Amino acid sequence: MTRTPPELTDRAALLRNRARVAADAQPPFLHAIAQDELQFRLSMVNRSFSSPAIVTGFPQVWGDFVPKARVVPDDPVLDLQEGAHDLVLHVMGLHWASDPVGQLVQARRALRPDGLFLGVLFGGQTLSELRSALAQAESDLSGGLSARVAPMAEIRDLGALLQRAGLALPVADSVTQSVAYGSLKSLFADLRDMGERNALAARRRSLSTPALFRRTAEIYAAHFADGDGRLRTTYDLIFLTGWAPDASQPRPLRPGSARVSLAEALGSVETPLPDQVKIPDND
Image (cartoon, rainbow, N blue to C red; front, side, top):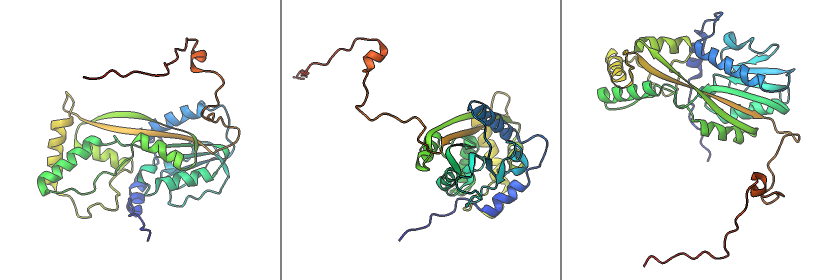
């Protein structure tokens, strides 16, 4: 009997959090960094795109990122037609997906052959300081832990997910941004303004006590403050690149099919190994 895995995210809470993100002229600063990085990656691709799509929970921020793009929410079932797009962007939402592979598979199916997928999400080092301080504070006060910061994938795992989703030529890279906050309250305000407050399905529904946040602030300041007493915070943006498979794409040669030795390619002299290697006795 197959068991359905538990949902990672409380979808209703996530949508409420995102709805609070204002449609300002300036996007939240981490979204702005993500946009700059994605623009750079698109500029490195020597082609134009006629039918792009953007998958995002922040249409007010990303809606006009690519001209004439179809913008759809990152619902569990994406509102994209199979083979309809030559570019699909999945932005700032995969870290909340209960089924990230499913999201990538649907994005791949929406691509035409040799279409480009680009994604950006928060990765494993994001809020590592806050995660550590909250866990220690809660353990000190109650002797247990509750779900407070979403688990985020490491870059090597995300690269493997691209392959599992059937995307060719997969690449995963990251940009780490360190931010210093004057107080824990300022950090929480930034997370609220980015729509990144706790939306875990397993989160505690009762209000947290002021004592928990006082203790968290003490631990944070003791272990993660800089020389000016400001709280260092890490944000890890991971960028994913892959292509819908196509016969025109380069493919690795079969093992043993090379016609030139590595020594010839490097212009060096190859020294053959002896037929037998004698291993000296240890006696």
